[in-house]
Image (cartoon, rainbow, N blue to C red):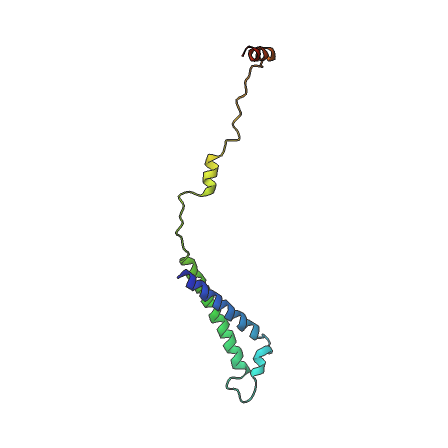
Length: 116
């Protein structure tokens, strides 16, 4: 259902682009080419039709977008996010490393190394 709604959204978008490009707000453009006397629809009726079609397509696009968001596949549900796992396994930066507090006697270390 999700893929069907996405395909319908693309079709509605293409139709809307075509209708918006055909119409001109001042009555000119491609709509004025239908002004012949033998035409069933005059320029005014063509403009009304294009305007209504634009509104209907905009409404259909809104409804299809809401429908598509309702059918988003949610198969891969994780128990915890990856970021929370990284935060929990991170080393505490406030923790001070345990260095020896007594200075090491270099001579005693060298003597221990020689005896071994």
